[in-house]
Amino acid sequence: MRFIRRSIVGLFLLSITFGLMAFAGFTVWQSLEARWSKETQNRPARERVFAANVVAVQPETISPVLTTFGEVRSSRTLQLRASAAGEVIWLSEVFEEGGAVEAGDLLLRIDPADAQAALDTATADKAEAEADLRDAERTLLLSKDEVVAAEDQARLRASALTRQQDLLDRGVGSTAAVETAELALSSANQSLLSRRQAAAAAEARIDQARTMLQRRNIALADAQRDLADTEVQAGFTGVLNNVNIVEGGLVSQGETLAELIDPSALEVTFRLSTPQYARFVYEGGRLIGADVTAAIDILGVDLEAKGKVSRESAAVGEGQTGRLLFARLADAPGFRPGDFVTVKISEPPLERVVRLPSTAVDAAGTVLTVGEEDRLEVAEVELLRREGDDVIVRAGGLAGREVVAERTPLLGAGIRIRPIRPGGAEAPEGPDLVELDPERRAKLVAFVEGNQRMPAEAKERVLGQLQKDKVPARMIERIESRMN
Figure 1 (cartoon, rainbow, N blue to C red):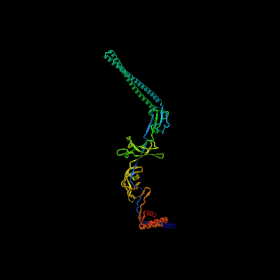
Figure 2 (cartoon, helix red, strand yellow):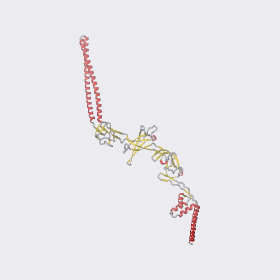
Figure 3 (cartoon, rainbow, N blue to C red):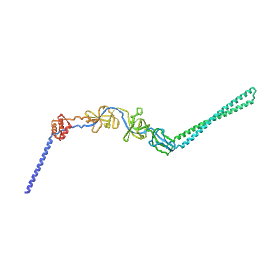
Figure 4 (cartoon, rainbow, N blue to C red):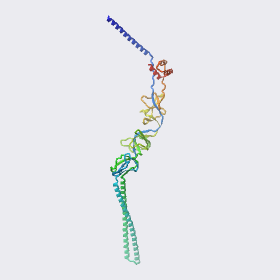
């Protein structure tokens, strides 16, 4: 009996279970049928619009600036060398690293004992040569007087001979007297010849004495120069560098003591490639005196110096390319030889060109311009220069149009954008409106009216928009997303 009762209860529970499962399946089926029978609401496809920065194309005349790097150097650099060997017995107080000196300042003195002794000897030798010259001149003067006396004596002897011959012709004189007069004249002529020879010897002695005096003068000048070489003076106003001598040190002849640099005669050297160099020469090959600005950052302080290109290197160095140019700096306070500087050179102006951000031009030399309905178009430009983050291009036929400043992979021809112009002014988005059928409009109005969470003012505004012939697509999209 108990078994029958338990069997009946089990059958009852089993029937109830099947009944509940059937009811659940029926309910699910009804829900699916209601879902499938519901009208499908097709949302309109909406074009995606991107915001992009744009710049206007305004052709102008631009002077490009070429940026490179260079080194500052001084055009007046003098190595101070010892012209004499010996011990350094005196040094100037400014003869030190970085010491400022004036032109003509005495910097150091080498022991002048030997040079002074040589000078004294040369002075004495000169005095001796001068005495010899004076003695020779006096001897020549006496010799000339003797020649004059001998000539007078010869004339007297000749007159005596003439008288004796006259007497002999008149028969008063004798032949012996004539012969005696002839012998006397011959002796006088011989004496005159000797006096003349002595005068010639005196003249030769004067020439020798003068030659010796010239040699003594040369030796004296050498001795004075050797003495002067024991002192080192500044050739021009400048600053000392690489000082490597102290007082009491021994130096040899020709040894480098220091380097004198003129800080007011600075120039900057920089190297340009051959195409860059071609921009700075005239048709005849003459170099353009382009303006140059050298800049250096020292502890956060920017130093700048202006100058002009003055010359170029005579030859290209071994293993080098391009050209090495020199620019003389007019006023460069704070700069020192050896400074590594940034050099900016002003190029000749380019007419009817445009400066654009470098991100506006792609590798193919094209830009994206804004066309009708703010849709992008592709245009070609001629790339002329790259200058920092900008490029200088020649854009024929694009004057007055707008170009996308920053290209991205999402932008291309035919894409619609919202232009953002310089200054942050964003172009108003064009109206993206759709027309609603009455049934869809009624559903949207019913949902908005029944939404208790929406503020009254917002609800009024939305209902006002829904009553219009065309409704913004974005508003419809938001309402339908909340309905679902």
